[in-house]
Image 1 (spheres, rainbow, N blue to C red):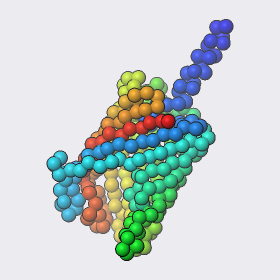
Image 2 (image 1 turned 120 degrees about the vertical axis):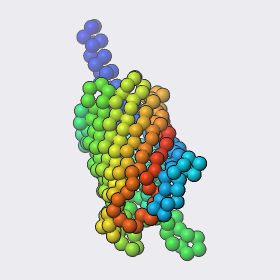
Image 3 (image 1 turned 90 degrees about the vertical axis):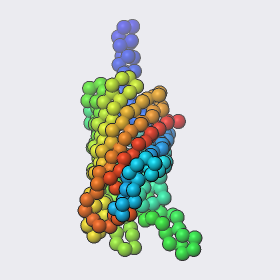
Image 4 (image 1 turned 180 degrees about the vertical axis):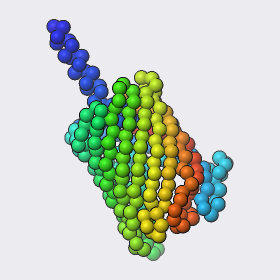
Length: 251
């Protein structure tokens, strides 16, 4: 009887470790899981034409990207997101190659579709694009999680197609059963060789509160450092802060 109880306890622990909380850095979704993420943010900054948003009164409030995900099998899932700089939205897939606790490996592919057109000229807003990514992540001990991801994106545009590359790293440490501190650093290489590559580093720090195993909230602060490189970013907002709250819910 005692042996059966120990086995049951070990099974329960292993199941709990395999299914992390909603916004954990190193998380493995399970079959038939459907989730949504969304939020709001306040952005302040200026562009290279010195259109200022450097004080809070000149800032703007906008929605964070909506993301929907469905895990079809324990290894394969599909997604929909409005998080695309060149298109109306994107659809994608994710495949989990390795799912060990200490080391996991995922691959991604997304297609961003530009549907919106000018009603008078029929000129298309945005550009169709595809991206592919690989991500490794894992858990060390009971509360520390890490992840590293590289993404390559190809954009079709009439004046010349181009590549983007993004490098992203994340760290997360639990300080309580429900509270964690999360930090991230991202480095974008945008419009590579068109005419010059633009380099955009950003850093993020925030908290994660797990309201339940299926719902979490993530207040954070993000700083977009001054971009370097190409001269074709005059209208892009640069050197700015973002104050945001993101939510994630599983259905």
